[in-house]
Length: 88
Image 1 (tube, rainbow, N blue to C red):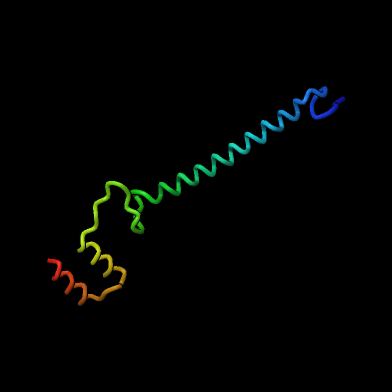
Image 2: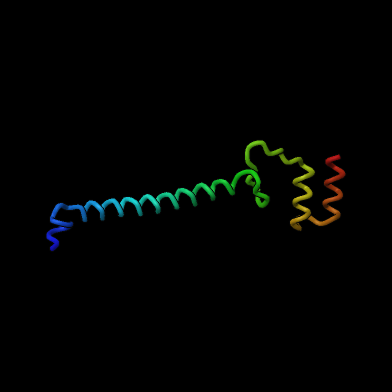
């Protein structure tokens, strides 16, 4: 017959429950840390979209910036050619 929280009233059930709570808390914290780490890694080198250039990335030249603006449609072909001639 069981008395109290554990077998024979020695509290082993309570300790076991506490250990399981700590175990699951560690699992959840580990998952959160993994997600944070993955998000930070995606913002560094190897990321092809956006301007999140990481350490060791080559700086953009003015011509690269001009080409990007033309590709995004911010300037038309005539303005692109005129500015490209100015840079040369």
